[in-house]
Image (cartoon, rainbow, N blue to C red; front, top):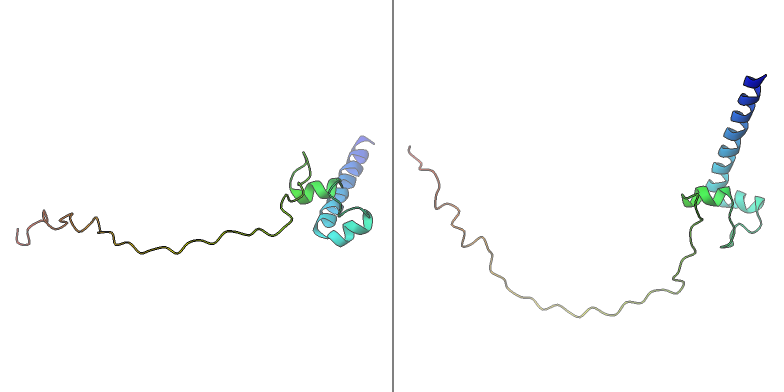
Length: 98
């Protein structure tokens, strides 16, 4: 008797979790289940799974207006001598005929 109830509970939890995954993958289906699914204050198991956190749902975005950056000034080219020109790489090479 105890094994049957354990199997029923495991099956129920598995089906409930799969249903929650299906709702998190389909926002339209989630909205049919919860009319306020698009509101920022809406919290349920689907929003927890969709946000990837069970502690709290994802925060609403802080920036709502498009961000405008200032213009970057034109860069002026500057010649810099290579640090490898003064290294004398072949100064201490092994002799050719040894």
